[in-house]
Image (cartoon, rainbow, N blue to C red):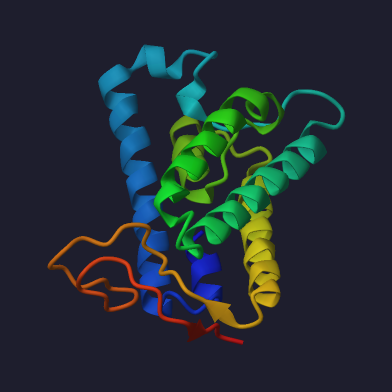
Length: 191
């Protein structure tokens, strides 16, 4: 999502790089901390450090790529539609949460349900499981960038919402400089 919002002109390059590095650092730290604290239960083959992996079988990797692409595309598109609607904006978190819940039930058997290269990398490092890592580094970012591009073209240059879902009072947003909650200025999307 970070790079999709960057593509939409809603984040500066330095913020996108910082968020990406921070997500990777957090994922690595969390997986390593759980490895130390939980030990054998976290390493158990049924958990395997929460490493994401395609379902076994002849078409497992292809199925995982397609599944990750679809869920990432839909999630990004729904989020963009919601946060760019005055009527739906307050439900954006609910929509995203419901989609993730559905994905956990329906999509997990196909790819392990990642949608986040950083999360996948943190678990892969803990498990030392590098097979098919490329799936999780390509499908979600490509899908979210495609969803952002489609949304940008459908909105014909207008994007109202910020990359931050909720704005706190008395704090300036680092993305859009709002100080008193969400507002809806129309800004041109970066070409």
